Length: 75
Image (cartoon, rainbow, N blue to C red; front, side, top):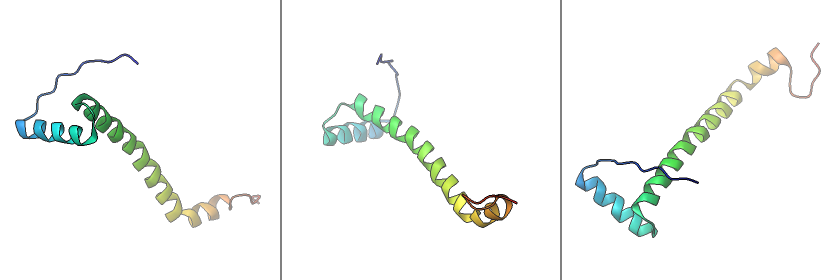
C-alpha cells in the first residue's frame, strides 16, 4: 500500500507521550499514530453496530407486533 506523508503539529508534551507509547509497544511513532487512527475509524463502525443491536433489542416487541416474529408468516 502506498504511503502518504502527513505533517502534524502537537505540543511537546503530546509528542513525548506519543514517543513513549510507541517505544513501549516496540514500534515507530508513525506506526503508533497510524494504528491509533485505524482503531478510531474502526470503533466508529463498531459503535454504530452496537447501537443498532441495542435499538433492535429494545424495540423487538414493537417490530414483532408490526412485522411478525422472525420465521412466522404474517396474516
